[in-house]
Image 1 (cartoon, rainbow, N blue to C red):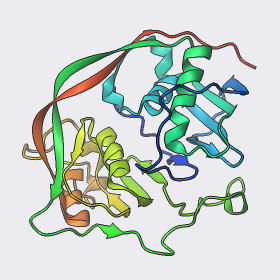
Image 2 (image 1 turned 90 degrees about the horizontal axis):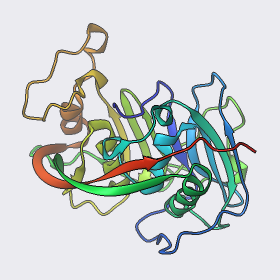
Image 3 (image 1 turned 45 degrees about the horizontal axis):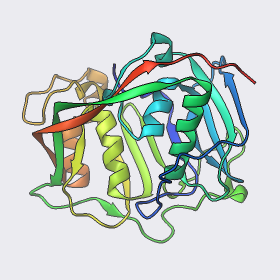
Image 4 (image 1 turned 135 degrees about the vertical axis):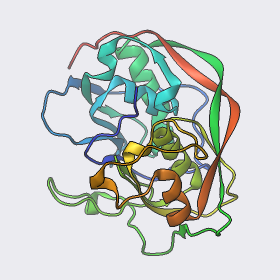
Length: 276
């Protein structure tokens, strides 16, 4: 299955949670949770923490929720019923007042286990992975500076239909674009792993938060390694390079193929939830 990259922008929003934000070792309980099947035609999809410590999921299939909850990529999820890839749900749940995106993951794990009856197990499999390295031409990536983004708050949340501000800690994806503001390389690498369909290991040595604007041809993402010939993009996309070329030209980064043991989540049981 290809990664979930809809024609809309997929946003993970809320207070940015970096490496310093510890995920609780004991899975927390969710106080109040409303779950409903989403049957709207709107392409908008998001997951995040809203003001007041509420975990919100909008129009997302269970497969994506599993990916977010367990911090894995699409290619690391196996098994499960077919409807988990198509049936979308909305969730509004009260979690911790000060939770960030990282701390939201265990709460969503609880919801999936309690309401969707999720049971899974881990398997280790050797897979082809990528190392992300500085290109010989030198780094071109932009380091975040003061004023490059705004911290999410109730005062600057956009009204329906209004453009989304450049929120610090956000990563947006379209089939031909990755855009991010004030994120650590680890967050960008997670997104890149999803787009490439393989684990990406950060070897850049970059410690600062970065701003990302990466445009590429999505049809180039076919599992071919960066040293293998890529298919010719459609005529409409000739103005954009492959993602491998875009990484070098726009960010001064390159990827190299390696063999690496990877963690696979196998879904053993999943049920449709009772709605409330």
